[in-house]
Length: 145
Image (cartoon, rainbow, N blue to C red; front, side, top):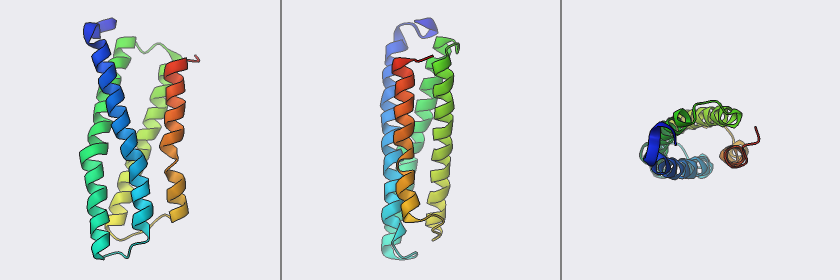
């Protein structure tokens, strides 16, 4: 059980819940960008998309990522950091966090009326969290190394 003792399963459950919230938001935000991309900057509809994207990040995605990291680090310290699958998982979560940061920057550029990336690339970007979560779940469940 490690230092978490009897709270281990509660911490693990909370970690999974916040991972689900984080991933749901990470799937939604690029899709919002796809819909927002074709809207004229400065229009009323543009303002609605800007507010939706801001709220999604501030209310769901950012807090869920923070909780995921805090709870995940608690679990990692409980394990003792010695397992290879955990190192690989942490690396992928770091990459996913970087992707999160990239989406946050993209949201700010959309809010300024800039469209730095095309609609096709946004549709491809929507696949990143799916690929990452497949690899992470395999690492955690199968523990190949």
